Image (cartoon, rainbow, N blue to C red; front, top):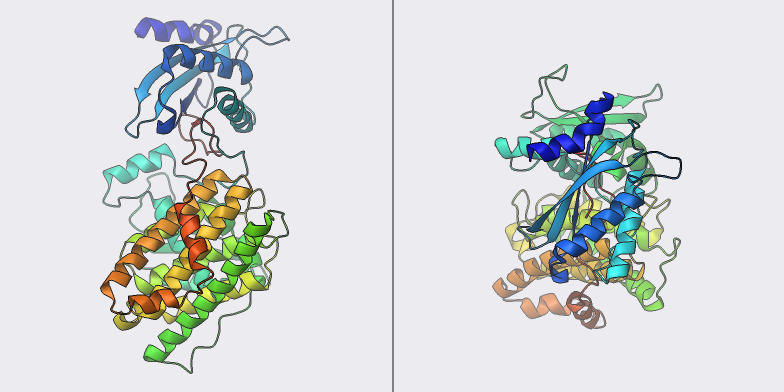
Length: 458
């Protein structure tokens, strides 16, 4: 191994070239479990083709090739056959390989390999991938008391607060009430929010001036930047006035309003799916994005701070809500506005009483939301957004698991089912039972942010 490393590094050491960001370009290439194993010979062909396509081989201008090594690790813990490819970015003649915009090139290469070898197809690049924690953040979380990286925890907190707020001032005020979170906001001369950053009190850093690790909104998620949030709030009306209702009547009011808005959104999505309308102006992206707020609202209203299937649905649905290429819709039409407004009202109502959250109204709302998310999954798949479709089905499955438990516990199970229009129930079963054409991203996959080892392609 030592000799192999010296041979790979020979051009770099011989020419005395040192790269500030490191000279090793490391990528993992994998296929999903259902595609079996490729074997050493086929993986060697794939590695050689990748090196050529990414520009690490000799080029037409006379530049020498980069030295590289591919290691076939076999099956991962999830059953995915994979290799690791390590390339020395310093070429044999001392020049440095160009990695500018390498990820789109990797993505296109992955799609070509999938088609050529008949592997499980994945989605093209559409800028819907989440901003994932770096390798260092993941390892830091594993060493500390917080089981998830700070970036992931803060993203879920901020997303929930953004769904409840209707103005920038309310958004910052709600964040300031979060017991574990510190927030710093920037305002312009006209008192408009120009940016914000958040940090966990327990996440400390020796390199930070104040000893905390801060994340701006855009570093949490593409649609959580201050400009995106300001546009979202400006596009929707404020929450309904709930001051005239209290106790159980208030719970019933917000549940009925949420169920009505969810049913309306489901009818629109079903019409789009039946018409196979995936055009940019078809309202689908509007509803998909607004549905994220309803999933959050249902989770907080029924489960509160307790983790369970509903909170799992919130995490699974995050990817589904992102509009391809645009991050979030340019505008929201009435059906999406009403869905977001109903979700905001449900969040304002707080955690439902035990009687309300186990009653037929809550069960009917969750079932309506299952139907909506399942229809969104079908619409995403029609549009070729396979990863988003798979995540939507996963979210629908979590929601459905909760509704099944509640129906079994409730003596009003039939009432819970009957409140969903009969025309929607068969469609719900069809959507949930339909298998997506692709699961998690494999040799293709969406554009991923780089960690300390420069990147990972799946």
